Image (cartoon, rainbow, N blue to C red; front, side, top):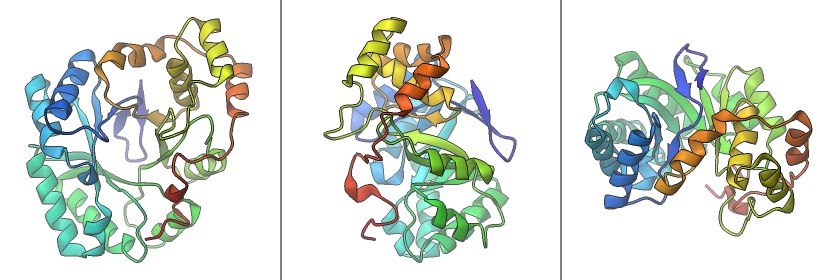
Length: 274
């Protein structure tokens, strides 16, 4: 399933994330994900694995034009100004072993640094080295500010979304602006045990699926993009979510689990100590 962005480029609705993956594990998992059928790979400068991700893509033998590759600009780079941002993008292109990035995101809305970073990103779109640009972890006020000067509208806002953090208002506002939403952390992180919730276990039994599949189906059925982490033993299971649907009642029941519970209390873009 493909989702059309506001620049008419399409992105696969489900991809694989590479956060926490390092070295040979990152290279191998990316290669295996592509061989399993995924065509959307998500990384970031902050993950320190772009070189391995790039090698995994090469090793898969998949044509580059068939892969949607995403990376994100590190917060520390943003603080160092425009030239540092340019250098980091050039380094990402080199590490990823590619002549272009399909989607480049601002990883976090670093105070007083977004405008300079965004304008550099726009330059790379105009040069053709970046196809699409977007943001991550932006709340409404961050988007409002960005849109006062952006020549190119962000295509995506990548935010934390799971059954305990449904983000309904934020998602609705992004859609109002024509910005697609991509869910990171679909199963929660840290001490949050989303898939262990009794409702999700019950629905897993009802649909004869895993609780993880129920969560991912709930996300994609909301029209969101998502990037569960690249774990080879779950690749086939994750791709299978496109083969069934949840009833409207079950969709709503999952949404009622919302607690506005972030995986890390520090990860609120409005209060993070930048």
